[in-house]
Amino acid sequence: MSTRYIRVVARIDLLPTSVSGRELPIKGGNSYRPNHNFFEPENGNMTVGFIDLPAGQDLWPAHSVEVPISFFYWEGLDGQIYPGRKWRVQEGARVVGIGTVLEVLPEQA
Image (cartoon, rainbow, N blue to C red; front, side):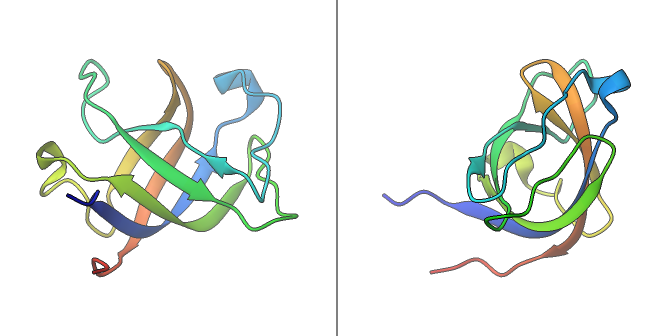
């Protein structure tokens, strides 16, 4: 059985350090795998998404970038991911950014 992913192009807005506590950038060339929460703040259901910035491109707090993201699929995500949808990017319980779906990409075989 192969793992399914939901692939999107999204804008990630990292929150300023004063809000999120994150001081260092997300480094390009490394896979950043934060939690993604598409539900209400008190709902702990999250998925892991792989944000792959190109090598040499860093995303600093208080900045934004458009990137492809692959989310692990699970049934709870059905109907939750669509263009314009915003969600919280989290490192554990700490919210470090806000994502916005720009485009949902076709599933790869």
